[in-house]
Amino acid sequence: MSPTRRDVLRGLGLAALATPLAACVTAGRDAAPGPTASAAATSANNPLGVDAARRLEVVIFSGGNGDKYAVDLHEAAYRKAYPQAEIKHVATQKVGTQLRPRFIAGDVPDVVNNSGPEALDLQSLVQEGHLADLTPLFEAPSLAFPDKKVKDTLVGGAYENSLIDGVPRVLQYTVAHRALWYNAKLFEAKGWSVPRTWAEFNALGEEAKKAGITLFAYPGQVGPFYQLWNLIYSAAKIGGNKVIIDIDNLADGAWTAEPVRQAVAAWAQIQKDYGDKAYFGLDHTQTQVKHLQDKVLFYPCGSWLENEMAKDRPDTFEYAIAPVPSITSADALPYEAIMIGVSEAFFVAAKGKNPQGGLEYLRMMLSKEGARGYTEMTKNLTIVNGLVDGLQLTSAVNSAAKAQEAAGKNTITDARFETWYKELFDYGQTQTNSVMAGRTTPDQFCANMQKKADELKADSSIAKQTRSV
View 1 (cartoon, helix red, strand yellow):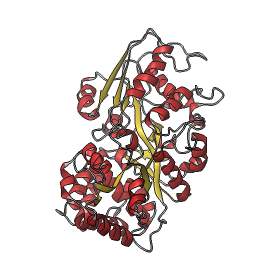
View 2 (cartoon, one colour):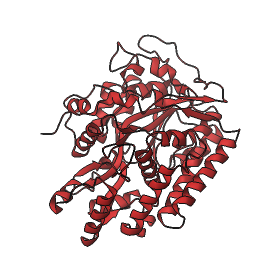
View 3 (cartoon, one colour):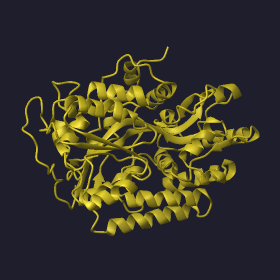
View 4 (cartoon, helix red, strand yellow):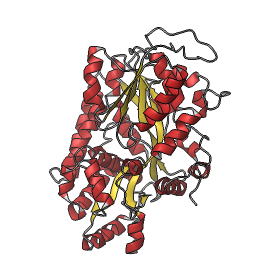
């Protein structure tokens, strides 16, 4: 029998997320603007001042989790509460390409799910005053627990991760586990064990090669950031979470630190000895289909993977997650360490036509029906605690729960420069493809990334963010 959500949450120990998901502070910018469109009168039943007849536009990144949850759950709930309001639903896999011209023109949607490879640069949006202050949402009564504020119903660290310039501006909606995914049924059939050390990883590579299987692959097109994450998390395993904190803080020498160089060199070696350059020409879906066909043994990704590939997954494939093998015998974090954080960013446009409606839409996402239904439809846990007792969870979620239980306090923190300095994150993806393809050396990768980080640090037009844990 599959475990229930309550069983898994108990095992997950979600309160532990508070430590890696820590507060950020900033310098150099004024407070975020509040909603600019006029609001209706507030009341106990309408704490955010929603105009019941005002149109609402919602843009959803239709990636691994699709967009059906938005239509059937969250927009349906909004329509039920405000039947006079027209809802415009927009699904896209190219958030930036589609919305950037609209933000420039001043024709902005109200709610944006800013995820995927073409996510908008949040720092640029902040500088232009486009991100609404989410304080009214977090301070509003929860629809799931009316005696609590929304802020007090969330897993530890979720609120802190919403902060840019010390103001909550982004709602990260899901709990995410990122590591290496594999087919548990294939391992059982072959009698293989999940490698715990780099030597075991290489030895398995030889066995996989004999079986005609590529040990490891990531998508060089529409997904190289999966491997950039993998490099950074591996570096943290060697040197501890300070490696990532230094990178986020644009600290001097953060990218040229020895743990980063060792991690990049280790993965470049795996690619050289057991990889296949053909995957540099594939996108994420194409690569994930190869994975389901057992042509790739390990794939770096997040816990949305199972839902993204649900229609293609054969009965012979059972998703399971494994930590990155220990690279050195002196790694700061044990083999069991795994990255656990939050993802699926949503924001409300401050200059939209219905920012109050946007805030209320997010509150409905965090309701019992909204959060529980989301988990049922996408197989992803949300940041809301204690709502989905009795849910039957999938093998992937169960595997992630076991991995988190094994990790205990040895959680790898999330890397926030992805949001804080998107230019650096985008540059990192091109550098990742370059070093993994053997066009540059690991030392050159580190030097190039450090040079780019130093340029951003010296640019006074870019507001700087910092974190301490």
